[in-house]
Each structure stands twice: as C-alpha cells, then as structure tokens.
Length: 162
Image 1 (cartoon, rainbow, N blue to C red):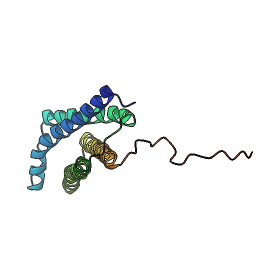
Image 2 (image 1 turned 135 degrees about the vertical axis):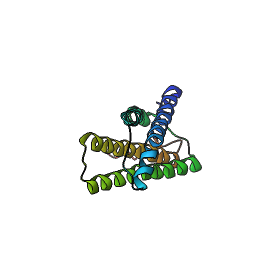
Image 3 (image 1 turned 90 degrees about the vertical axis):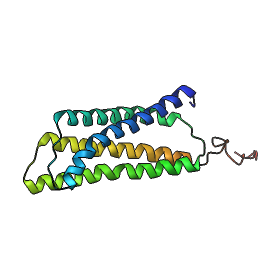
Image 4 (image 1 turned 180 degrees about the vertical axis):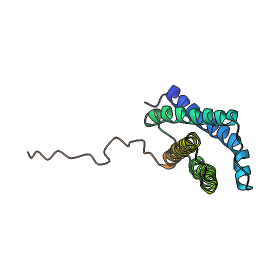
C-alpha cells in the first residue's frame, strides 16, 4: 500500500517527532548549561512537565510512524537520505551529554531522585527511538528499488521433465 494518505500521515508523524525533540531540547538546554557551568540543575516543575510533553509527543509519533513505515515506498533521494542519517546521529549527542553531566553531577553531590532518573532514562529511550526512525528513513531513501522488484529477473524455462 503506497497511498498518499498513509504517506502524508507518516511524514506528519516524523514532523511531530522533530517538534517533540525541539520542545525537549529548548526546555533542557538551560539546565544543561547550568550543569556544565558547575551549578545545580534548577529546573522548575513546569520545566520538567514541558520536557515530559516533548517526550510523550516523540514517543506517540514514533510508534505511530513505525506502524506506517512498512506500507510506504520511498523514492531514491541521496541527499535527503544522507541528511536524515546525519541528523539521526547528531540528535543523540545532546541527550547523551545531558545524561552524562546530570548523572555525574548527581553522583558527585550524593543526590539521587528517582523521578529525575526516570525522566532521564525516558529521554534517552525517546531519543534512541527518534534516532532509529530517522536512520531507517534515511536508509530507505538511499536504497535503489527496482520497478520490477517482485518479479524474478530470469524466467524459468519449461523443459518437459518432471
């Protein structure tokens, strides 16, 4: 099934993942800067709620797009494929750096808050899924799909033998 409605919904889900990632990035960036400057993470409950909203958007859109992707056939687009592969790799850098700095900062100070650790693990998982989604689309755009992919290339000859 290569219907236009499925393809449109798929790309809307990709855009929703990008939007959710941006919500998380812009919400977590001040905390990351504070942590790397040697300060403490001073996020308010409102900031954590915004981060959760971004992660929920990412995860909802990921699982929806994941179901649609096998139904979609992609045209060969080398530049877009490479851009998505690059974006998939770069997207994981920030959340990895944030998790590393936050984990070492909390271990250093002897602080451990379960819900903050769960939020951090959730963020790592959401960005892992986002990275996988972008990479799989990038790979699909780089594949050359033959028009006759389902047909055998060599027709068997009838020999009359059993």
